[in-house]
Image (cartoon, rainbow, N blue to C red; front, side, top):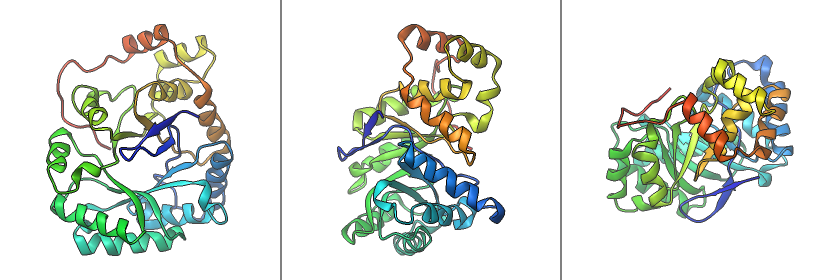
Length: 277
């Protein structure tokens, strides 16, 4: 499994598991837990979740999946912007830890920018680190101007990662933000790497994948895995899809294949607003 280094230098898997939309239906709990556990078995040991997902329900699914296996996982969760004050962040983290049935979160992210000052959120993250409640902190959905502002906040240079909407069809961050993150040594976490399944149905990508012995979803993931400093976190509650996703870790695209994908999905030619879902 390819690894990506956080700004601290710690390596993490470049391919993990997302949990958006998990925990919303109690009847699906068993299947969701089984999917996450299979992912762990297949090496997808980075698991991403958030207090927002099913209002804590996804964290509960993750907590159940990690019973007896916590040390096998690199666990990521996120705090709501409206909870991101100093005291609010501390309280939100405690609630997440309880739902996750763990004593620590490996990477804790600000989910998107809200009205709370970045300096206050960073202070809370640092307090949580000192208490051993989180190991690293980062952000999500922050654009280049936000990241530059964060860099100027006391302690802001310790930001380990920025989780962003990034896939073959959403390449806007390549113009300015992605190169800046690489320069700073911060990882990029690509959420919705298959565009919630839409890339799997893209006719051009399907044709490319057939010719190169993979599925369209695997091609989309392999392309992300070819990008420097990028972590992809596809979500699936279906065992066959988890296996399909995990197999992408062993697929390497050569320069000619990457060039063909550039023709199918053109890189940006100028700055644009940050894409979000």
